[in-house]
Image (cartoon, rainbow, N blue to C red):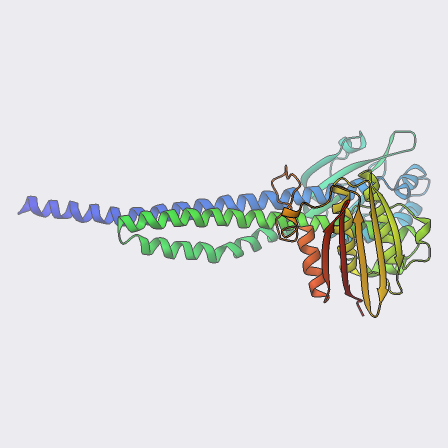
Length: 413
């Protein structure tokens, strides 16, 4: 009897272990998957933030206005008065927490806190004033930030100062927390399925395979979030080009109206655009410069009564940029306004679009271009399609001696 009792106890313990083991495996799998997904998400947010602050610092450090003010630093008060409005404008446009211009003697020329202007910087500026670009996370006057410091090079090739741009660490933490809340329902669902599967070993094995599949989908979700950040950076580039063009043409009111958008600051003035509406002129000048960097010439034939708006800028930028990246030598942009609608044609002399791809090019994630980063491509044309649909428009594509995109959309009122 005693032997049988011990055998029964051992049998019950074995069954409990068999029942608990699948549950433990589920918990380990879900917990590990969540940890990996959050690690990927956190690294993606940090990398995108580092790239963003580095771009803002680099573009500001290359402005003649900043270089001239630091080279002629007879009066710190005059330099502050000249550069602080620019720094505040860029802070709002780029969505960063501070832009600090640093004098050669390590005093701040600009700072979001007025009392800090003219005072020495609170962190080490030795490296950047020696000509190095420094990206790190440090504690400063407004808190712990991820910052990028870029030297300002004078006309004689020497370092005449630096630009430091930063985003608060707690903002990145909030982004990660939001991503965690998006993952939480999936984790709960996975746990419920895993607990149900623990009633039998064979069922549990089947459910574990399903959980592994769900884990793969969670990782894809994290990659999609990183791709969304890349998409925002993609559009941020074009928007800051436009802001730079508006400021360069003394259209300050229009610049403030468009301040929520941002991009790397580079434009080429085109005499043919004189008299064109300010935002449209700035957009096309920015695209002219961007395509020129790719070795592509932009031809313009534009007649509009109303100025461009944010959605028209998005359509023009994506279609023209795609043509340049595809290897076209010349891109032609035709834009007309008639009966309350914009009508546009973007054509190029590039390789065109293979017939096999014509039905796929507007699908999200589809791209014929290589993607060495692994972050995902095929975003721009999907954005164009959705934007035109929102404005009651359409787009048609054809390929004869190059690609040709014809679109229409309602004029924004």
